[in-house]
Length: 625
Image (tube, rainbow, N blue to C red; front, side, top):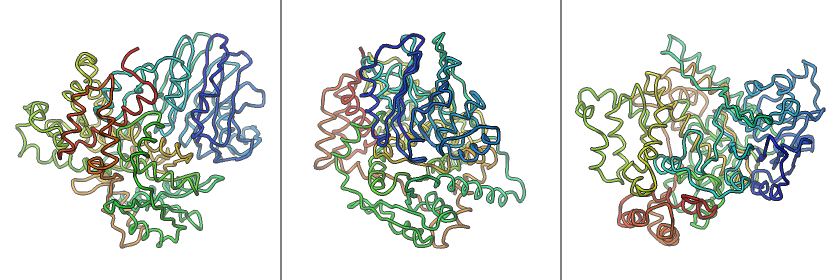
């Protein structure tokens, strides 16, 4: 895992006096190496910060060029099937100098052209300059594990792993994208390839972009899109599917344990991480596992369950006592993160990675399991709503949900379920994670600064990711995979690991596992009205100790709602909420904070606002030029 940066143009580029300093803004993404490439035509410059994971020698150094110096590449990520691809390419006459996956990516392009990305199993953000074809190619992995931001500006294409580094390289004042700001307030993150900074875009997952240096035209094309097609369960197929899943997951874990630095499993004690530990023990004599406890927060103590798994599989287990969750730590995180997401589990996730970084460079976790295999509670609840809708709640079909929501206080998250009850869930899934509704966004951003279409953007964009499959479970899984997982969970995981120079890996997001989950696993093996992740739990029952609690589901959050009502937390959050800000209405946010202090639970709103305001001030992001 690394950081990449670059510019391509259809004219000779001037000297970038600050290119090196901007590249060094990503030193945390790659503390082990630094490299720059300037093309002979002087139209392309590439930069790379390296976190050495595979091929630790200079043979893995980037930017990397082919033998004829016709192709140059900077690459962030890991190609887990690089050994298999290397053998395939060698059989076709290619030779290799080292063992890095970067060299495999380089030769794969030479062999297969722009379709090379279809051969890769793993997370990646690639920038490749083809000298002979006069084009720069950007590509991003199927799940969106690795970030890749870009901007077209003055016949140039700028790109970076870091949003704020991209904005800095472009050299213009950073201004909010109003639609993305509305989306952040509504659901906690921007949607549809947009970012919080105007004109800076995120290359969407499963996409390639080709910039022609002669015409300065950027062409974007999807090379992969998830397509749930699994039918109903056939007789006697549950066992067959379980065996196939075990094989796929086991091989995914094997591939992701393969690195030249210490790797570990983040063992929370839940089903996903415990299952990964069981599978890892099949491939290594002594699995390293880490569990972090947080002093003073017994409700989030996962020690007993993690110890059970560690003892059963005889792992090299480490219990790390997390540092005190202080407001200073949150302030540091808010100032350093390049693109905020409204998720308070950012804090414990950052702490876990910080603790692990003292001993390991690679941390394997369970991201993707809930979205692929139906693990969220609201999946079951939506099935229950659908079952009882006809007899119990028919009147909601003809009453506007928004009118009913207006009668319920903002602090009640259950109000989001009114829209669920008034929806045809087999057609599309409404967003039940709504933080601010349209009325709140309008009040917070002030009507003069945002149009109705901008305010409706998050809702209308969300529906395009959650409709058309004729199944509640399929719609739920697909919408969360393409929105919540990509734009929130994976952003959180990437930023919190990289800020500690740790590479996070996710076996559930192995390409083969993703295809298996969407194409072969039927709804009835994912979610029912009273059970979730059914096929994963069946596999866990086979591999985990009998005393393990398969129903255990502990969220990775801290009691921030009560924490910010006292002491230093109250002072920090109160100071931020009452500070000057040109884009969020003072009266609305201070009243929100006051109501929280008086007993309302507005923690999601307050956390999101506080994080956003600190980030915007740090990076001088404003509402207008």
